[in-house]
Length: 419
Image (tube, rainbow, N blue to C red; front, side, top):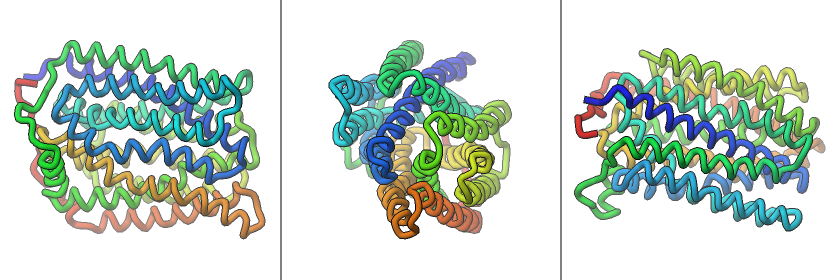
């Protein structure tokens, strides 16, 4: 049977990823402010986010296959550690002088390539460590770690930028990689590596992952709908910063982002303590619908109080939605294909972010020109339209019977004693 200490191992692994999230958030915030100050363009800010995201997405499928073939903890160590190379490259360019947009893009892309190893291995490791009844609590903790990127990092970055510059943020981020690699190494030392005895060809492994996510119609539809949802949510995430920076400074932006992220903290703590016990599809649809409504209010006017209140509500809904999506998918996919399945799921469901990052900034800049207003108001208009579409998509999701029936399906993931 699974040892009682496994949840403690998960907490150590989670703590390492929490620190990594804070460091990554510092870099993300700092680069966003830096690029907007240099170019004044929402599209250029979106380009940085796209290049930070796209390499990892394209490599998520082979990374998922590797997570089923190799030592998952070793993959996490390689991904976390080597992703610091890209950040180091940007830092060296800035020490030489002002880094160009091209140099920043190259460094961000390098970091993203190595980070692609991390996510499927991390998710599959959670399945290795925990029992089914612990999944929901773990999902809440993972969301809490993710929230640190928005809760702790913006406020800390805003304070540091007031007394120093972006180079300090990059140095701190690089230092966090040593901590996270060490934490993962400790967990790896106390947990036997789970490797596939029969090394099937890449194509066969990819096909097995595809079958895992398409075996149940509801799972596949949920993944496709998730791609649509991430498109609308990605537009919000990429345009919130230029919208605020158009009328406020970086310190105000940092404080505003932290206040908004308090919503994510509250629901993540609640999920970490109690989890969700039933009604996953209903909670998923309701949380996404509420998030869409919050986006509409977020873009109404250049009022930091209204922005913070609606942003708080938006972020409060994200852990609920992520927890429900995670549970519905995890419990309907066999454990032995979880690594490659999560790679495919990440690729398919996050295609919406690619669409948002590639188009939202351009639309915001274009609308600003047509409206004769600031880039911030163009960004606000795109956010509001995206919010309305998110409400409609969430209602459509709940109307799909195959998705609702996922809660009634057979549960995979029964553990054996060998893990």
